Length: 306
Image: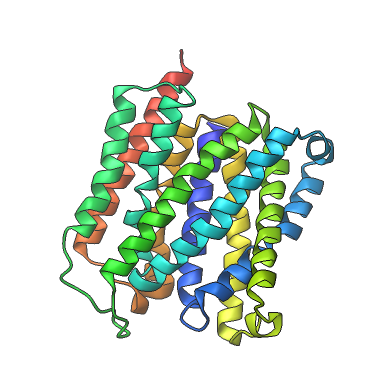
């Protein structure tokens, strides 16, 4: 059950990350958030490699593994993260969360039809419940303005959320292919490769577009604080996610991670209630999704008994 516990902790970290970025982009642009949160992961992952003693695993990575880990980092940390943050900018954290759930369908498709992972009826029930919750949340648009006066833009937020789902749904497959059934240490090393590759790609874009670094990193103090929190929590969530994927099948890790939608609401209420829309419909959808997560956890326990 260690893998499921790590996946759940990753979901909590991921949710707090998104709540923090919601505050940060009130003061600075999404572009600047990417410029801060992606590179900060490199030194943090270096510390993780030293703490978990993964130097040998890092040096022994095959060219194929390096390729897949690098591609996963660029796809998830650059494209996926940018689209996620844009969706949050237009919808807020709580409403954007259900749209990101669509990535689960993509991950499950890859897990069953490419990785040939086991499929059961409880798997199907849990996934349907996790996805049905977001449908309830998105069923009504009766409230389009937050308490602080921020307008909710459903069309743009939905579009960015779909694009994010494509990236977030594909990256777990790339991580599993890069891991090649390796252990936790191999995946920690893979996480470093992903962050380093994404950072290199980011700075290549900055150089090509000739964006002045001085302008890019000129941040409002309040926004800078939240972006730093975001970068650290993103690192924690990804470290735990990579470790969970080393222990569990992708078809288990990704649905459990989708429980982050519940933690988005909890953290959003505690920190951002003026900037979010939280009502009975949202809470109902969250509860249904959480039930789906527990169905999957029950299925994992049953499978471990055989």
